[in-house]
Image (cartoon, rainbow, N blue to C red; front, top):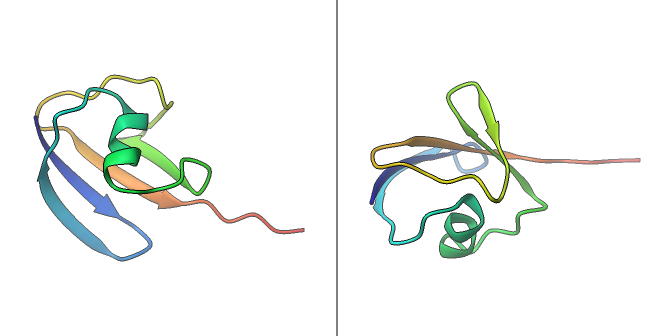
Length: 67
């Protein structure tokens, strides 16, 4: 499947070929810890179990917590 992925932390956009189906598989493919990013498609926040679709535009938004 072909995806367009915007990484907010690195301010980069990449078009990738991805053989998985879910958000968690995408994060694993990109070597990203799911606890450090929020994944969105348009205005919709996606859960780790959400299924991705051909030609989706995905945004990876850094999650920062403090205390």
